[in-house]
Image 1: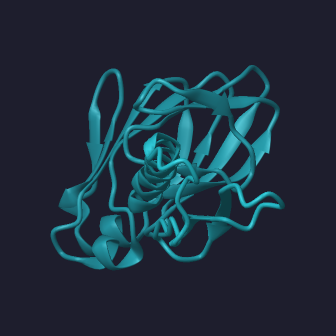
Image 2: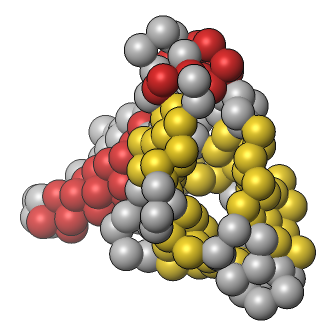
Length: 178
């Protein structure tokens, strides 16, 4: 995975952070000339913090992907962050997708399930495997919630192989497959 290295390749020998393909922080053989380790430790802590942030994002694989957006839509993440939904965006367990007026969104889940959200819909991915091998396992569980609005869906591998493990909750009922 990606990482950050620090080296003394600056014109004046000052440390430079560099993005790499390796997940490591290399502070190199250099040290401050006056023997003060504080700048080097600050740089190391910054590089380590950035690396850990990247690791936490990369560690959670996507449960689905936005295939198309017509009009406007937003994604609310479980951590409270919100962003505009665009084609290619990854969706994770805990994400909520909201469509605007005269808008719709098409989602493809990791098990090839398809979900079409209609205008003025709020839809949450409560539980979903985050990789294809997990989705193909007999114990795989999928749970989504239609908070408001309307949708159309075609089940994927989970609903086809283990129908009892696929749930779509609505304000008035829980829809399962028999």
